[in-house]
Each structure stands twice: as structure tokens, then as C-alpha cells.
Length: 505
Image (cartoon, rainbow, N blue to C red; front, side, top):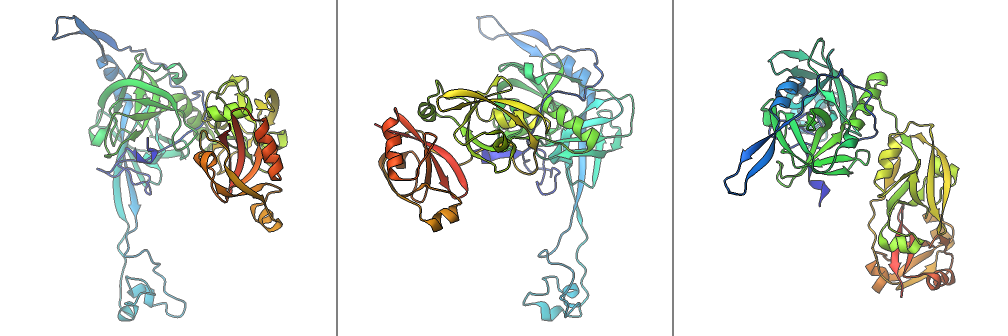
């Protein structure tokens, strides 16, 4: 699956942060758990299940009836219209001229350095005024005093935000906070006694459950579509959101709208689609409401979101790497590099460690670690169970605060799953060691057969084999002789370090 085909749904120009009508939308991300922004619990409404007569003689097919849910909670779903002013010019040059000729820039629409500049000196020219761009999305009311939750890409950068209710009342909204990493935004309108949704628990959601989406696809307000949960815990571009995957028809304009379970509870915010056409193709993604409420609570109280930081780069554990490290099965998050001076380094985490548990909870996949770390407040001590030298051990780490870098980011470099050794290597000279900022290591001059199949390339620097430093060919040869089935080579490629499992005979 090519995740580059993820399209932002609300007709939004990514640079504007608002959805342009008729244009596919963009993306968004996450961090966290626990819904602290709870709305007053209205009476629960459960979808009814009604028999539908089948054309065949087999019997009847039981399908859910969402009409009571739409009637009850539809009024709490709003249409959000935004206006963003974008300056239009011929080439984006400044209106100001050169210091030597302050007149040239004002009279020249092509800029002071263009070949046409001499023809415009002294000529009055006024650049077009900023042009308003209109877009729209969806949202839902979580408090009766007018607090509304939506997607960040719906309202980010907007100069005007208007909320339209189902009864055609309109309000000017104030943006309380925007978090682009999770694509969550909180806005507020000046009103009271408004209808609200009931917030549920997305952690209790099961694959195969029926779900309902309400929003404004293509501007058609308060439209209801239904489907089932296809999968949970999908991590896409952000690394901070364990998305809910559904087959609910989601289209431009649905972004920011709620996703309901059969009990009438909001368990997600509709966010993304996977598409090659720009429209719905059967795969949609929603932000779990637990994540959204945790982010929203911070936006309301402080205006920004803080996330925990571990300070490691991780990758998935394949079967070949599991064999190399002596793991019973491929699980956890393999640490390929540790940030210098970061929390993990201070606590003693090392490249080659496999993080198996966080605070006692097993990590089946490496993508679970960034999501969970980001949800923990900076300064909190966490317990890691790591696999090192064929045995588990416990390390306590005090988390730092995430800035612009990822907390525990998944390495995007590719690596092979299997192969045999077929390397021509030599030690790095002092100049190469200084340029690569490494001590020791072997530079790959030629890779063939198994090593090449595993993804090793000429110019890669082999730093370690099965966790042991490699300074010469004998070190590498000895590690190969001790390996059973696979050997895990830690290589440096440019500024990136990653483990590559190579099959040995």
C-alpha cells in the first residue's frame, strides 16, 4: 500500500489549512489517551436491528437501523465553513525595490530583477489584494456552552470560521487551539444549551463492529453513512495516532465529523482516506476519541500539547532479526540508534536493545511505542523491559519533552529480511571515521549474493554484528561463525543507522 496516496478529505489546500471546494483533503496525526473533555451524558441511543426480507428463500438478513441515532445526535454535528485570505502575485517578489532604486519594485509586477524591469520604472502598479479562499468541513459539539471538536486541517490558518447548525443558525467561531501533529482542533462559539454528543471509549471498539459517520461530504450537510471497523491501531504518517480503519464512505467535507458506535457514542473523528482518485475507495481512517479528547483537553487548558520523548530511533523486528537476537518470536521495537544526551541514553538504553514492554504492557509492533510514549507527560518515569544479550532486563527512563522531533521514531530506511554474508570490507581510515563520526567499523566495498539481497550496499559502514562492535574483518568473521541462521548487522548509511538481518549458512 502506497501511503503517499492518503488524501485530505475536506476540500482543503494544505497550505491554507482549510478545505477548498472540490479538492481532496490532506492528513493528520496524534498522541495520547483518556477523554478528559467529557460532555454531559445525554440519554444513550442504541441503533436498532431490524430484519430485512431477503429475495432468496434462505430467510431474512438482519441489518442495523441507525435512524434513532441520527435523530438524537445529528443536531450536535455541525458544518464548519472557513475563509482564508491568500495573497496573489505574479511571482511572489516583494513590493519593495532595491536599496538603489526604490521605485523599481513598485512599478514592476515581475520583480526588480526581471529583464522587464527597465520598462516599468516609474510606472504605478498595485498588486492584487489577498483573495479569499473558501472551504468547509465538519465538527461536533462536546459541551453545551459551544465547545466544538474538529480537524486541525479544517481550521488551521483560517481568517474566518463560521459554524452552521442543522437548524440553520450560524455562529462565528473562535479557534481555541490547533495541534497539527494529531490534526485535532478545538473551536468555540458563543452559545448555550446546545445539543451535545456522548463520548465513548475507543479502546473498547472491536474489529467488525458497525459504525456510523455523520458529516457534510461535498457540502451536503448532516449526511449519514455507515460501515464496519476494518482494523485498529493503524499508524500512518504521523506515528502519534493509532487510527481506526473502516469501510465507511468518507469524502471531502467529512473531515472533523464524528464516528459513532452502535450505542450512539462517539468513538472517533473522521480524518483520512486512502485513495488513488481523490474520492472514497473503501478505506477510511478515524482518530480514536480517547486520543482526541486528551489532546483537546490540553488545547483548552494551555493552548498547546506536550508529549513525552524517549530519544530513540526504532524499527520493526522481522523474523530474521528475531533469530539473530535469540528472540522466541518477532515482537517489540528494535533500537537502531539512541539520541546523544537524550533520556534513553542517560538511562542506559543501547542500540541493539529490543524494547519488549512499556510499563508492563507488551509491544507487539514497533509502531505502538511512539504512540504510547507521546501520550505520557514529560518528566514521567517509565519502565522498559528490553532484550539484550539473549536475556531480558529492566531499565527505568525519565521521559523528556518532545520538541519538533519524534519521540521514538520508526526508522524509514529499508532493510532486507534474509540473506547470507557476501561482503568485501575494509577498516575505515581516520579521515573516514571523522567524517562518519564513528570509531572503528568496516566500510563495505562490495556487496553480493546474500548481503546484497539483504539490502546492504557499497559505502555502508558495518558497526556491529549481533550487538558486538566490529573493528576488523576478524571480528566480523567470528560473529558469523557464532551465529545460528541469521546475523544482525548494525550499519550506518549516511546519517541513518539500522539493523539488517543476513542469513548465514
